[in-house]
Length: 69
Image (cartoon, rainbow, N blue to C red; front, side, top):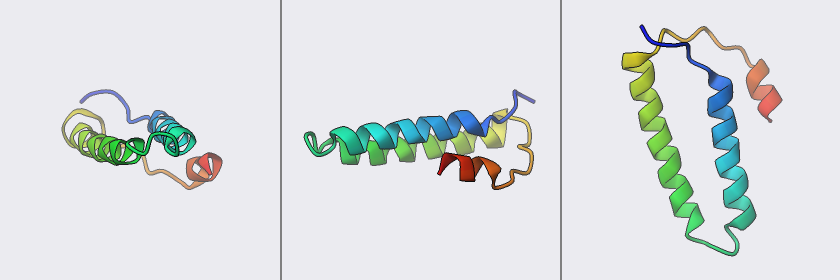
């Protein structure tokens, strides 16, 4: 059993990537495929972490999602 699953840090990471990509992607179009690869990498790593290393995440309600939006 590892640490707890902290979804708030995952949301902040995703929102940061989206913000930087949308802000500077017009000037550097290479950021769009790089962001897609980053999202894919994050998704794979989080799946592995949840499956093998972290405790079972608590059931999440929609409060965090609504705050992020």
